[in-house]
Each structure stands twice: as structure tokens, then as C-alpha cells.
Image (cartoon, rainbow, N blue to C red; front, side, top):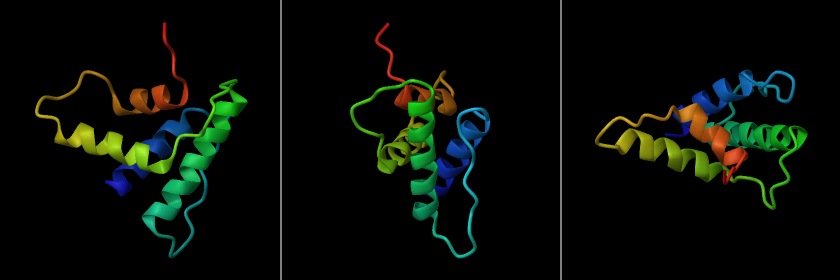
Length: 93
């Protein structure tokens, strides 16, 4: 689950080149450590894009979203990277 969250979050950060950069994966680094780096970069990108959230999104939320997507009986219509975008930019409209 963590590796899949890393992959999707890396893809998500790669579409925001003006606001975020994908951190380098260091040799010997575990999956959760890399996820933490990706989440920190995503939270910094949200601040750069003008999101003034109270608290940054913790890494476990991204893993939970991937878990829910994989365990759903029916395929969801919303793409996983769109859900990650919603985690950073909560919109009530």
C-alpha cells in the first residue's frame, strides 16, 4: 500500500512543476521514509498554491485512500490523483 501511495503521490507532484518537485529517492531509504518526504513536499506545494489549511495532511491519510481504492468492490469513477488533490485543497462548493 505504501509503495502504491508513493507512486501515485509522485505522479501527482510531477504535474505541479511550478509548485513542487519530486524528492530524490536515496539508496536504502524505506518506503515510509520516502512517503514522508513526498507528503512534506505536497504540503509545501499546497502552501505555495495558496491553501491555508490549519494542519498539514499526515502520510497515513494517503495510504488509507489507496487502501480504500483497492478494496472497493466496484471501481470508483474518481481518479486517485484527483482524490489526492482534494486532500490538499478542500473545497466546499
